[in-house]
Length: 162
Length: 290
Ligand SMILES: Cc1cc2nc3c(=O)[nH]c(=O)nc-3n(C[C@H](O)[C@H](O)[C@H](O)COP(=O)(O)OP(=O)(O)OC[C@H]3O[C@@H](n4cnc5c(N)ncnc54)[C@H](O)[C@@H]3O)c2cc1C
Ligand code: FES
Ligand code: FES
Image 1 (cartoon, each protein chain N blue to C red):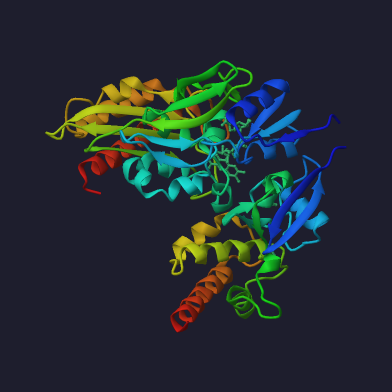
Image 2: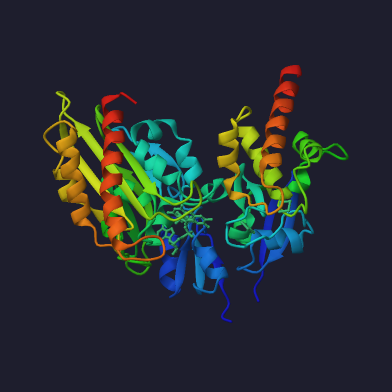
């Protein structure tokens, strides 16, 4: 098997790994780089549990080949908290009990962060549409939406204070 | 299992050579169809040729004559962020932005939507109604192909071996022109169109429709350019009589199958309804009242 050598940036640090051509970015993150926060719920683009950012765009890492990551900037759930300090979205997910089994949570957090970066003050409807590609079998979504809107308010306030 | 090859050429020539050299090679754009098919074992390419590093394949440009060029592998999200393109071709942009979820939008391209050749591909009716042209590159050089000539049937295209779509060109357009795309799905998000309808209108100075193009998705093996439906509304205002003619002509153009998403009769009926509604939206946009 001829392996492909990939050099990339993951959560701000440069990273290198060897991969087979058919390996997905999700599998490389989990198995080569030990970043097991991103989950595989479906492997077909339907559930969003594998959501990551690539060059600033939200994508399903299960539908991207690891080899495509060459020279790209990858951000995963592991880059969200700073040391022991949770991101406001993570904090609000805890406060609102926006997770039960937690399988969907990394993907929802990454997707919600992308939303608030492009739209700091989304309406409930915009939030629901943006997150339509993130499936959750436990929470019924309501608490998730409330947590995201609440975190958005916190982030707006932080920005005003800064 | 035969070993898969992954290549990411950085020029058109390299890409064409890579595609032509490996029989069974497939173009990879966003992978939201191809990688799904590979993972399900439905596609077993010998090589995937990632064209996203080919100059021109990703990006949106406006030319001096007002024509827009959209790289065939540009993610739909990037298309939706282009303000001038959205203002000029709102129908094309809204169709591209209906594809999948936010995550899918981050990767899904117009080239992939067209060349996957699903009869229900959302961006294709809008592109056909827009009279968009594909710039196809291959071993014999460059050629221009109208979008409606690319799909040959479900899962099949008319592209020759070694060819791929480099970009889409949307013709220059003046004032008083606009477009719209509507689809019917049983949900509000994340579903495959039962019917899709794209309408593109140009109005004369007196407000009468001077040019109209209607394209329908999921009502035939390939996206239909319903020329008679466009012709049915040229020459006057978009009044009730014109809408009735449009509805009848759109229905008459349909040749759908019946499946779990809808019967042939239902699809035909809906095609007329969506053509009318999309035409009204395009008309209001062209008149600047929406
Ligand atoms: C969860 C989910 C939801 C979806 N929802 C929708 C939807 O609502 N509406 C819809 O229409 N589609 C939908 N799709 C299907 C898919 O996202 C679209 O068809 C998308 O536009 C494909 O683009 P891509 O760049 O990902 O193509 P790829 O998967 O990279 O390629 C698709 C096919 O086209 C070929 N190809 C790609 N680019 C070129 C090119 N430039 N020249 C020649 N051949 C090329 C490939 O070889 C392959 O056969 C969905 C998919 C998923 C996973
Ligand atoms: S695992 Fe990628 S979308 Fe479900
Ligand atoms: S918390 Fe269990 S799937 Fe969302």
